[in-house]
Image (cartoon, rainbow, N blue to C red):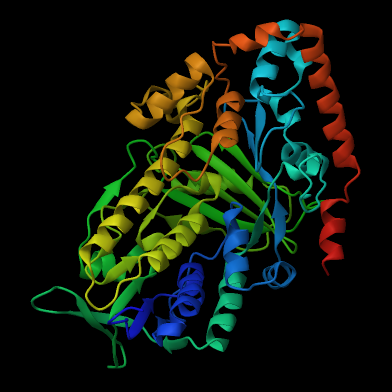
Length: 500
């Protein structure tokens, strides 16, 4: 038991980040009789576009007691097996980053080692590397089912996440949080009161004159960062040198065919276009660098590149890529867009929110605010942001495109040392370097390296003892078995219908 537990936690801002924090924190601290409150203004909008996620969202929903079928119905959600990348290595190319692992019945040798040897022997007859990933095969076939717990089954090697309407998700979480005791305050914050000696936040003042005090403040106010930036002035570390995209047009369209169980990211002249399929519509957007294309030209490019009927006016979003130097400063923790932003190429925004909430709960302070807790929180959060930063930069670093200034500059940029080391190690040895606080593990890095055309020079020397015809036949049988296994599954639409 904490000697001096927090009496009141105030979350500033709603949206996905605010209501995720409200649900999780309230369930964690209710045993200590700590009150969790949230203040937001209906007059202030949230980003609220169609959202894609990574598989960690499943654990978060489970931990707060949110049933999957209920979640999908309430948010118009669909399943996501990974991301298809078009035109990234070069125009006309595509590859798939699937969730889960590659599979081959190959004893101690990895799928990558078998594929590399077979590729040396028979070239393209070895098939695409994607053909050995169950999630990629299912996605391309438009099929879906839940993974199997039997490790002998090909269905046990994949994972999944979701696409959903972020505004509907926040509404669902708000309903749940308020039913469980979270107090919501409506109002716009106009001032912040700091303690004259400690610099801790004592209260925030609303436009109607009310003061809301708390022991711990959670800044979920989005890009404006009312507390972390405006009140506390916490330094922002800019990633723009590597990731110069700073704008996005977003627009919904009607679904133009069967809803696919994956996200698509298509490289364009000055950035990339997303397609996120929901049950009731498709979310689309063009993420671009304003230094390489005008806002109006980017808008026109997006509208000319859509599949379905446009359902609304495009919305322009402006942002900076980067993170806070300190996420937890004094008695304030920034979570969500107020803490930082990495372009949404790998759908990591909600994962970073979830990580920030989970770590705060594990390091929750009492009224003494031991500085070691904030130091550890900031260390781990910074590592996670920087690891994701490297993974996103990789998509650009290995491109062979030189058709526009944007892509030529990406090819020539100086990389972070951590990423340069990973690339060189994989190029020379085929080994994936994994560091602390990784969101994406070995198979994800392999998918990107191979998909972007980086073929390792080294072959495992123990593979020399394997019969070449057996290697080739093993891979052929695995490709065939995965393709057959995918066809046995219901279509994505059929599976969603079964959930009601």
